[in-house]
Image (cartoon, rainbow, N blue to C red):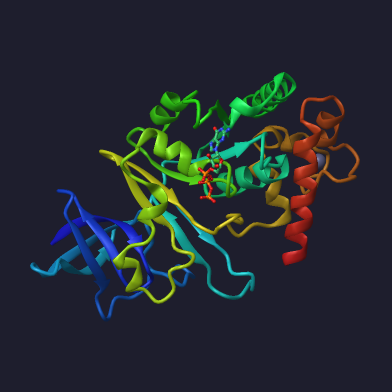
Length: 308
Ligand SMILES: Nc1nc2c(ncn2[C@@H]2O[C@H](COP(=O)(O)OP(=O)(O)OP(=O)(O)O)[C@@H](O)[C@H]2O)c(=O)[nH]1
Ligand SMILES: [Zn+2]
Protein backbone atom coordinates (compact mmCIF):
# COMPACT_ATOMS: atom_id res chain seq x y z
CA UNK A 1 0.00 0.00 0.00
CA UNK A 2 1.33 3.43 -0.94
CA UNK A 3 0.14 7.00 -0.58
CA UNK A 4 0.20 9.48 -3.44
CA UNK A 5 -1.05 12.78 -4.75
CA UNK A 6 -3.37 12.89 -7.77
CA UNK A 7 -1.79 15.40 -10.13
CA UNK A 8 -3.94 14.81 -13.19
CA UNK A 9 -7.27 13.24 -13.95
CA UNK A 10 -9.17 12.35 -17.07
CA UNK A 11 -12.16 10.94 -15.28
CA UNK A 12 -11.13 7.32 -15.83
CA UNK A 13 -7.37 7.52 -15.27
CA UNK A 14 -5.53 9.31 -12.51
CA UNK A 15 -1.89 10.29 -12.59
CA UNK A 16 -0.52 9.70 -9.11
CA UNK A 17 2.76 10.94 -7.68
CA UNK A 18 3.97 8.97 -4.70
CA UNK A 19 6.03 10.46 -1.87
CA UNK A 20 9.28 9.54 -3.69
CA UNK A 21 8.22 11.46 -6.77
CA UNK A 22 7.49 8.33 -8.77
CA UNK A 23 4.53 8.58 -11.17
CA UNK A 24 1.84 5.92 -11.60
CA UNK A 25 -1.20 5.70 -13.85
CA UNK A 26 -4.01 4.71 -11.54
CA UNK A 27 -7.58 3.70 -11.82
CA UNK A 28 -10.27 2.95 -9.30
CA UNK A 29 -10.90 -0.46 -7.92
CA UNK A 30 -13.95 -1.97 -9.63
CA UNK A 31 -16.32 -1.97 -6.71
CA UNK A 32 -15.05 1.31 -5.29
CA UNK A 33 -18.06 3.17 -3.89
CA UNK A 34 -18.58 6.90 -3.93
CA UNK A 35 -18.85 8.43 -0.49
CA UNK A 36 -22.01 10.47 0.14
CA UNK A 37 -21.01 13.45 -1.99
CA UNK A 38 -23.35 14.32 -4.82
CA UNK A 39 -20.70 14.55 -7.49
CA UNK A 40 -19.94 12.99 -10.82
CA UNK A 41 -16.25 12.36 -10.15
CA UNK A 42 -15.03 10.48 -7.07
CA UNK A 43 -11.43 11.74 -7.28
CA UNK A 44 -10.00 15.09 -8.28
CA UNK A 45 -6.63 16.70 -8.74
CA UNK A 46 -5.15 17.44 -5.32
CA UNK A 47 -6.63 14.35 -3.71
CA UNK A 48 -4.35 12.14 -1.66
CA UNK A 49 -5.09 8.48 -2.34
CA UNK A 50 -4.01 5.07 -1.15
CA UNK A 51 -3.06 2.64 -3.90
CA UNK A 52 -1.52 -0.72 -4.75
CA UNK A 53 0.97 -1.04 -7.59
CA UNK A 54 -0.63 -3.20 -10.26
CA UNK A 55 2.20 -3.59 -12.78
CA UNK A 56 5.75 -2.49 -11.84
CA UNK A 57 6.97 -2.28 -15.43
CA UNK A 58 3.95 -0.38 -16.69
CA UNK A 59 3.69 1.83 -13.60
CA UNK A 60 0.00 1.17 -13.23
CA UNK A 61 -1.85 1.28 -9.95
CA UNK A 62 -5.19 0.52 -8.37
CA UNK A 63 -6.61 3.19 -6.08
CA UNK A 64 -8.22 1.73 -2.98
CA UNK A 65 -9.10 4.75 -0.87
CA UNK A 66 -9.20 8.55 -0.68
CA UNK A 67 -7.72 10.45 2.23
CA UNK A 68 -10.38 12.79 3.69
CA UNK A 69 -10.21 16.23 2.03
CA UNK A 70 -9.29 19.47 3.78
CA UNK A 71 -11.44 21.35 1.27
CA UNK A 72 -12.41 21.24 -2.38
CA UNK A 73 -13.87 23.36 -5.11
CA UNK A 74 -16.86 22.06 -6.95
CA UNK A 75 -18.61 23.19 -10.06
CA UNK A 76 -22.35 22.83 -9.76
CA UNK A 77 -24.28 21.65 -12.71
CA UNK A 78 -26.55 24.26 -14.27
CA UNK A 79 -29.38 21.89 -13.46
CA UNK A 80 -29.91 22.19 -9.76
CA UNK A 81 -30.80 18.54 -9.41
CA UNK A 82 -27.84 17.14 -11.34
CA UNK A 83 -24.58 16.25 -9.68
CA UNK A 84 -21.68 18.68 -9.47
CA UNK A 85 -18.10 18.13 -10.48
CA UNK A 86 -15.13 18.40 -8.11
CA UNK A 87 -12.46 20.48 -9.81
CA UNK A 88 -9.71 20.20 -7.21
CA UNK A 89 -9.10 19.24 -3.60
CA UNK A 90 -6.87 20.23 -0.68
CA UNK A 91 -6.05 23.76 -1.78
CA UNK A 92 -3.96 25.97 0.46
CA UNK A 93 -4.93 29.14 -1.35
CA UNK A 94 -6.20 30.71 -4.53
CA UNK A 95 -4.45 33.36 -6.56
CA UNK A 96 -6.65 35.45 -8.80
CA UNK A 97 -4.57 36.94 -11.55
CA UNK A 98 -6.14 40.17 -12.76
CA UNK A 99 -5.04 43.19 -14.70
CA UNK A 100 -6.24 46.76 -14.88
CA UNK A 101 -4.46 47.06 -18.24
CA UNK A 102 -5.58 44.92 -21.20
CA UNK A 103 -7.71 42.78 -21.17
CA UNK A 104 -8.95 44.64 -18.11
CA UNK A 105 -10.47 42.53 -15.35
CA UNK A 106 -13.77 43.92 -14.07
CA UNK A 107 -14.34 44.47 -10.38
CA UNK A 108 -17.52 42.43 -10.72
CA UNK A 109 -15.49 39.44 -11.86
CA UNK A 110 -13.00 39.89 -9.02
CA UNK A 111 -15.84 40.05 -6.49
CA UNK A 112 -17.59 36.97 -7.86
CA UNK A 113 -14.33 35.05 -7.65
CA UNK A 114 -13.69 36.20 -4.08
CA UNK A 115 -17.20 35.25 -3.01
CA UNK A 116 -16.78 31.77 -4.53
CA UNK A 117 -13.45 31.32 -2.77
CA UNK A 118 -15.01 32.46 0.53
CA UNK A 119 -17.78 29.91 0.08
CA UNK A 120 -15.16 27.18 -0.35
CA UNK A 121 -13.12 28.65 2.54
CA UNK A 122 -10.05 29.18 0.42
CA UNK A 123 -7.91 32.24 1.22
CA UNK A 124 -7.28 34.37 -1.86
CA UNK A 125 -4.60 36.80 -3.01
CA UNK A 126 -5.27 39.14 -5.93
CA UNK A 127 -2.31 39.67 -8.22
CA UNK A 128 -2.51 42.66 -10.56
CA UNK A 129 -0.30 41.94 -13.55
CA UNK A 130 0.90 44.10 -16.45
CA UNK A 131 1.69 47.01 -14.15
CA UNK A 132 4.36 48.01 -16.68
CA UNK A 133 1.81 49.22 -19.21
CA UNK A 134 -0.23 51.38 -16.84
CA UNK A 135 0.33 55.12 -17.09
CA UNK A 136 0.45 57.31 -13.96
CA UNK A 137 -3.30 57.56 -13.79
CA UNK A 138 -3.61 53.79 -14.24
CA UNK A 139 -1.10 53.16 -11.46
CA UNK A 140 -3.03 55.48 -9.17
CA UNK A 141 -6.23 53.60 -9.92
CA UNK A 142 -4.50 50.27 -9.32
CA UNK A 143 -3.31 51.52 -5.93
CA UNK A 144 -6.85 52.60 -5.09
CA UNK A 145 -8.20 49.16 -5.97
CA UNK A 146 -5.43 47.40 -4.04
CA UNK A 147 -6.18 49.59 -1.01
CA UNK A 148 -9.85 48.67 -1.27
CA UNK A 149 -9.24 44.92 -1.29
CA UNK A 150 -6.51 45.09 1.32
CA UNK A 151 -8.83 46.99 3.63
CA UNK A 152 -11.27 44.07 3.36
CA UNK A 153 -8.48 41.65 4.23
CA UNK A 154 -7.28 40.33 0.87
CA UNK A 155 -3.58 40.30 0.13
CA UNK A 156 -2.72 42.10 -3.10
CA UNK A 157 0.36 42.13 -5.28
CA UNK A 158 1.42 44.21 -8.28
CA UNK A 159 3.47 42.42 -10.92
CA UNK A 160 4.89 42.65 -14.38
CA UNK A 161 5.75 39.28 -15.86
CA UNK A 162 7.61 40.90 -18.72
CA UNK A 163 9.67 43.34 -16.60
CA UNK A 164 10.18 40.96 -13.70
CA UNK A 165 8.58 43.32 -11.20
CA UNK A 166 6.95 41.56 -8.24
CA UNK A 167 8.05 38.18 -9.57
CA UNK A 168 10.04 37.30 -6.43
CA UNK A 169 7.07 38.17 -4.24
CA UNK A 170 4.90 35.97 -6.48
CA UNK A 171 7.37 33.10 -6.06
CA UNK A 172 7.30 33.51 -2.29
CA UNK A 173 3.54 33.58 -2.30
CA UNK A 174 3.41 30.14 -3.91
CA UNK A 175 6.29 28.61 -1.98
CA UNK A 176 5.42 25.27 -0.32
CA UNK A 177 1.74 25.61 -1.09
CA UNK A 178 -0.91 24.14 -3.36
CA UNK A 179 -2.37 27.13 -5.19
CA UNK A 180 -5.34 27.42 -7.48
CA UNK A 181 -4.24 29.88 -10.16
CA UNK A 182 -7.14 31.58 -11.91
CA UNK A 183 -7.75 34.52 -14.16
CA UNK A 184 -9.12 35.42 -17.55
CA UNK A 185 -7.34 34.34 -20.67
CA UNK A 186 -4.60 36.79 -21.57
CA UNK A 187 -3.92 38.28 -18.12
CA UNK A 188 -0.52 36.60 -18.08
CA UNK A 189 -0.84 33.36 -16.11
CA UNK A 190 1.61 31.45 -18.32
CA UNK A 191 3.98 34.39 -18.50
CA UNK A 192 4.10 34.80 -14.74
CA UNK A 193 4.52 31.09 -14.07
CA UNK A 194 7.21 30.84 -16.73
CA UNK A 195 8.98 33.76 -15.06
CA UNK A 196 9.40 31.75 -11.87
CA UNK A 197 9.68 28.26 -13.39
CA UNK A 198 11.08 28.62 -16.91
CA UNK A 199 11.53 24.86 -17.33
CA UNK A 200 7.89 24.08 -16.75
CA UNK A 201 6.41 25.49 -19.93
CA UNK A 202 2.84 25.55 -18.65
CA UNK A 203 0.96 25.39 -21.94
CA UNK A 204 2.88 22.69 -23.76
CA UNK A 205 2.56 20.49 -20.69
CA UNK A 206 -1.13 20.21 -21.32
CA UNK A 207 -0.74 17.99 -24.33
CA UNK A 208 0.50 14.68 -23.11
CA UNK A 209 0.03 11.10 -24.15
CA UNK A 210 -1.62 10.54 -20.81
CA UNK A 211 -4.44 12.96 -21.58
CA UNK A 212 -5.23 11.02 -24.74
CA UNK A 213 -6.26 8.04 -22.68
CA UNK A 214 -9.21 9.95 -21.30
CA UNK A 215 -12.58 10.29 -22.88
CA UNK A 216 -13.41 13.87 -21.95
CA UNK A 217 -10.33 15.93 -21.23
CA UNK A 218 -11.93 19.34 -21.45
CA UNK A 219 -12.84 20.52 -17.97
CA UNK A 220 -10.33 18.72 -15.80
CA UNK A 221 -7.96 20.68 -13.67
CA UNK A 222 -4.24 20.03 -13.84
CA UNK A 223 -1.56 20.26 -11.24
CA UNK A 224 1.99 21.39 -11.94
CA UNK A 225 4.95 21.09 -9.62
CA UNK A 226 6.89 24.35 -9.73
CA UNK A 227 9.39 23.52 -7.01
CA UNK A 228 9.59 20.89 -4.30
CA UNK A 229 6.28 20.81 -2.46
CA UNK A 230 5.02 23.76 -4.51
CA UNK A 231 2.12 23.16 -6.86
CA UNK A 232 -0.22 25.23 -8.95
CA UNK A 233 -3.58 24.04 -10.14
CA UNK A 234 -4.76 25.32 -13.46
CA UNK A 235 -8.37 24.97 -14.54
CA UNK A 236 -8.21 25.50 -18.30
CA UNK A 237 -11.41 26.77 -19.84
CA UNK A 238 -13.14 27.38 -16.54
CA UNK A 239 -14.17 30.99 -16.18
CA UNK A 240 -16.09 31.07 -12.93
CA UNK A 241 -16.19 28.74 -9.99
CA UNK A 242 -19.74 29.22 -8.79
CA UNK A 243 -20.80 28.90 -5.20
CA UNK A 244 -21.11 26.20 -2.67
CA UNK A 245 -24.84 25.48 -2.35
CA UNK A 246 -25.99 28.90 -1.15
CA UNK A 247 -29.20 30.68 -0.29
CA UNK A 248 -29.77 34.38 -0.93
CA UNK A 249 -29.42 35.12 2.79
CA UNK A 250 -25.97 33.57 2.83
CA UNK A 251 -24.39 35.62 0.04
CA UNK A 252 -23.53 38.53 2.36
CA UNK A 253 -21.63 36.12 4.62
CA UNK A 254 -19.09 35.80 1.85
CA UNK A 255 -18.38 39.54 1.84
CA UNK A 256 -16.05 39.90 4.85
CA UNK A 257 -16.84 43.61 5.30
CA UNK A 258 -20.57 42.77 5.44
CA UNK A 259 -20.18 39.69 7.59
CA UNK A 260 -18.96 41.83 10.49
CA UNK A 261 -22.06 44.04 10.40
CA UNK A 262 -24.85 41.53 9.75
CA UNK A 263 -26.16 41.38 13.30
CA UNK A 264 -26.65 45.15 13.26
CA UNK A 265 -29.48 45.04 10.71
CA UNK A 266 -32.98 45.46 12.17
CA UNK A 267 -34.25 42.27 10.56
CA UNK A 268 -32.28 39.09 10.98
CA UNK A 269 -33.22 37.94 7.48
CA UNK A 270 -32.35 41.34 5.94
CA UNK A 271 -31.17 41.08 2.33
CA UNK A 272 -29.73 44.62 2.50
CA UNK A 273 -31.79 45.68 -0.46
CA UNK A 274 -34.35 48.24 0.74
CA UNK A 275 -35.27 47.04 4.23
CA UNK A 276 -35.50 49.72 6.94
CA UNK A 277 -32.76 49.78 9.55
CA UNK A 278 -30.21 48.07 7.32
CA UNK A 279 -26.66 48.40 8.66
CA UNK A 280 -25.14 47.40 5.33
CA UNK A 281 -26.92 50.12 3.33
CA UNK A 282 -25.93 52.60 6.03
CA UNK A 283 -22.28 51.54 5.79
CA UNK A 284 -22.42 51.97 2.01
CA UNK A 285 -23.93 55.45 2.40
CA UNK A 286 -21.17 56.38 4.83
CA UNK A 287 -18.46 55.07 2.52
CA UNK A 288 -17.43 52.29 4.89
CA UNK A 289 -18.40 49.65 2.35
CA UNK A 290 -17.35 50.35 -1.22
CA UNK A 291 -20.10 51.10 -3.69
CA UNK A 292 -18.56 48.66 -6.21
CA UNK A 293 -18.67 45.83 -3.66
CA UNK A 294 -22.29 46.57 -2.84
CA UNK A 295 -23.18 46.59 -6.56
CA UNK A 296 -21.48 43.20 -6.92
CA UNK A 297 -23.46 41.97 -3.94
CA UNK A 298 -26.77 43.08 -5.47
CA UNK A 299 -26.04 41.43 -8.80
CA UNK A 300 -25.08 38.24 -7.00
CA UNK A 301 -28.26 37.92 -4.96
CA UNK A 302 -30.17 38.39 -8.19
CA UNK A 303 -28.19 35.51 -9.68
CA UNK A 304 -28.98 33.25 -6.74
CA UNK A 305 -32.62 34.23 -7.07
CA UNK A 306 -32.76 33.13 -10.69
CA UNK A 307 -31.27 29.74 -10.02
CA UNK A 308 -33.77 28.81 -7.35
N1 LIG B 1 3.11 44.26 -21.00
C1 LIG B 1 2.92 43.08 -20.42
N2 LIG B 1 2.47 42.04 -21.15
C2 LIG B 1 2.29 40.86 -20.52
C3 LIG B 1 2.56 40.68 -19.14
N3 LIG B 1 2.28 39.40 -18.82
C4 LIG B 1 1.86 38.81 -19.95
N4 LIG B 1 1.87 39.67 -20.98
C5 LIG B 1 1.46 39.40 -22.37
O1 LIG B 1 0.07 39.12 -22.40
C6 LIG B 1 -0.23 38.10 -23.36
C7 LIG B 1 -0.96 36.94 -22.69
O2 LIG B 1 -0.10 36.33 -21.74
P1 LIG B 1 -0.25 34.81 -21.29
O3 LIG B 1 0.80 34.56 -20.27
O4 LIG B 1 -0.30 33.92 -22.48
O5 LIG B 1 -1.70 34.86 -20.63
P2 LIG B 1 -2.53 33.66 -19.98
O6 LIG B 1 -3.25 34.23 -18.81
O7 LIG B 1 -1.66 32.50 -19.73
O8 LIG B 1 -3.57 33.33 -21.12
P3 LIG B 1 -4.27 31.91 -21.46
O9 LIG B 1 -3.16 30.96 -21.80
O10 LIG B 1 -5.14 32.20 -22.64
O11 LIG B 1 -5.05 31.52 -20.24
C8 LIG B 1 1.12 37.70 -23.96
O12 LIG B 1 1.29 38.41 -25.16
C9 LIG B 1 2.13 38.16 -22.93
O13 LIG B 1 3.38 38.47 -23.48
C10 LIG B 1 3.05 41.82 -18.40
O14 LIG B 1 3.29 41.77 -17.19
N5 LIG B 1 3.19 42.97 -19.09
ZN1 LIG C 1 -29.34 44.73 6.05
